[in-house]
Length: 168
Image 1: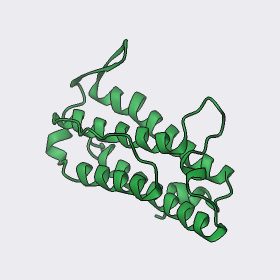
Image 2: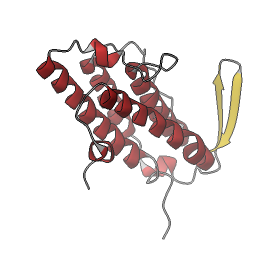
Image 3: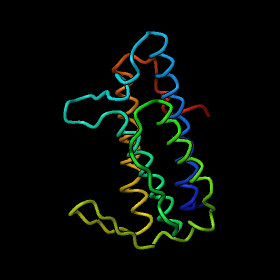
Image 4: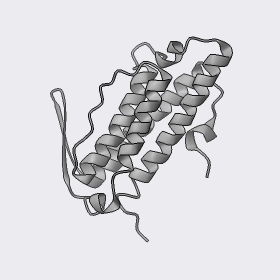
């Protein structure tokens, strides 16, 4: 039995973004119950040289919307990266899930060898479709999801491993 490029990407992205949304819901409820300014969480970091929680969520969503679009051969949606509240981060996650759900298996499957070129400032990276997903997108996506989780846990939000991995 084999797994398709679509199966290895879009459904997993949607599942993990749904879990992220639930984690952020818990953080918003916690902030309200404890009368903590939500910006404490939105701007929270684990270390001074790390991006804040808001940027972690932005990068996580950028990773998967970009991956889905590139593997499907469609334009990557552009977001403004200006979210500063739980509601705005939730809207970004919902928008990303909605975009991913427009992608069909037939757009992605068979693109394991598609050339993908990325440019970040002066840095350029070249991948083929499957290594792009497995070696670049998935590690980066999970890093930013985990960092978001860790920031909230560090700030006292009652989340655990099952919140991250979700229910089966």
